Amino acid sequence: MRVLVIGANGQIGQMVVSRLKEKGHEPVAMLRKEEQAQAFEDDGIDTVIADLEEDFSHAFEDVNGVIFTAGSGASTGGDKTILIDQEGAIEAIDLAKSHELDHFVMVSGLGVENPRGVEGEIRPYLHAKHRADEHLIDSGVPYTILRPGLLKNGEGKGTVTFYEYKGETKSGEIIREDVADVLVKIIGYPPEDKIYYVVKGETSISQIL
Amino acid sequence: MRVLVIGANGQIGQMVVSRLKEKGHEPVAMLRKEEQAQAFEDDGIDTVIADLEEDFSHAFEDVNGVIFTAGSGASTGGDKTILIDQEGAIEAIDLAKSHELDHFVMVSGLGVENPRGVEGEIRPYLHAKHRADEHLIDSGVPYTILRPGLLKNGEGKGTVTFYEYKGETKSGEIIREDVADVLVKIIGYPPEDKIYYVVKGETSISQIL
Image (cartoon, rainbow over all chains, first blue to last red; front, side, top):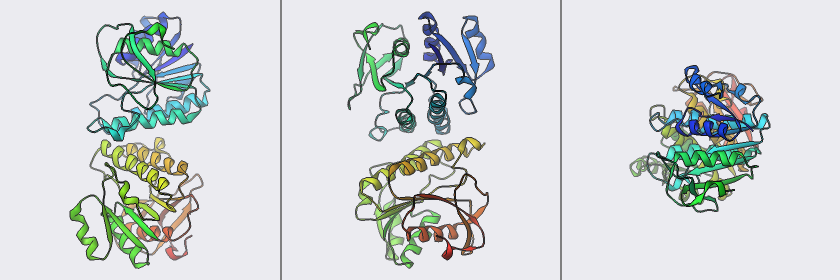
């Protein structure tokens, strides 16, 4: 599958791109800046320069699926949360629909299911991600939403706790490498329009789905 | 009609509340702080203390309609834009639906129809208002959306240019007092689930609708 990776220069994005290639997919790394492209192209990975705040429809030509792993980051403030995490995602979903893509995989997060139940500075971000997820669910685009626990660095374990959302969630952590492996596993399966959660655990990633 | 005015302590909100009472409606001023209530009660206006960032469902008991004229203001940043202008509005719409209210009047703005067509710092705000308007349109709650031009202070003229949105808009200014009079006129009519724009003009407000 030819997969547009939105947020390819992020920590998880970089892992996803290289793993997609290893597994025989054709990743296309969507990058905001021209100078980010060389490192990907040196690894034989196709790139497209596009900005979520501008018209990025050209990035959707000639791909079959999308993995959305972009994020504005914790330090950029609420305006960027709206422009990137919410509206960038919603526009990507609309473009996936108009281009009739086969699968949209959204990287979401714990707490996104009910932002009003969460106190603290994270709440605006959770609201924005919630709107994006709701838009995807209502869009008609075949999708998988993945809600990982608190992201940690470190070597992937190859095992996780992976479960479909049925109204309750487990809190927990997850290593970014394992999230990347789960995303690559998901994109290889036909979408069933489901929401999954993933935290640390003992189930081999090769056994999920 | 017994009308909950959300944002009653704002400039337009205060005007709306007093005009509703003059016209024989029963306004209920929704206020964030206890100390804001006395001035309204001195004028014989009912009040309810409620915060858009918390549970404010109690404000919806025993009212028939809502005028939403709350706003986080230009200086509070993007997080408040999400929490108040977008999510406060969306929660109010959901409460109007669960309480089966007869009319939800939303104060929106020029540019909200297409935030991606607008450059500059206002864009996150327009996106947030767009999401709120879309939620209202899709909610099944009987509604009127009013999109006024650039708001100005000064004495109301009693005349406006008022038109239904058909894919194009006129830019322009409008005096807050005239917006308040238009809102009171709107709440007195059965909702037709339409979007109207209002800027300065020559049509008597008594002649619109």
